[in-house]
Length: 196
Image (cartoon, rainbow, N blue to C red):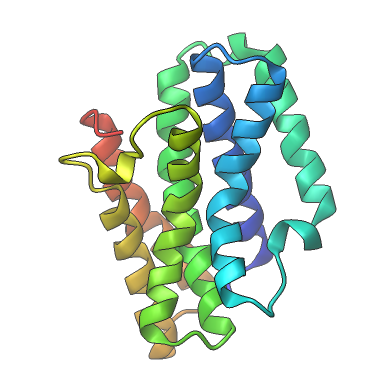
């Protein structure tokens, strides 16, 4: 399993992404909060429902849920802090894809999902929240748009993590290195080129 703080950071990065996008679309505080939570928890809920008997992540961490709601409120009332909102979304989105891919694959692998399904659930965890966010906004999810390699970035991170774990190479340090050297930079390059 990856360290708990990676799970926490992935949720916070996802919540931040959703809240920033909601502010960009001029939603009210309820919309910002709901969209933030959907983005931060959506992919993980898909994963947990498919794993069935291993618990739903957000229900086991109520203080993280409260922190996520508080973050949405802060983003709504102090959006001027994020003067360059596109850059804020850029950073948070790139970070969340890398973190979610690793955290999702880690939980699936530790629950005995196997090699292929751990990779698949890692990808689902990484892209599920963003897809739900886009659907809630009435947009085509980014993973379905032409020239968008959103899922490819998640696949790269999940695959590399599962391979490292399967062959005994994934210590805490290597997992953090994986996050920084696989899915995150690929997604960052895509965002920089305007691929949402």
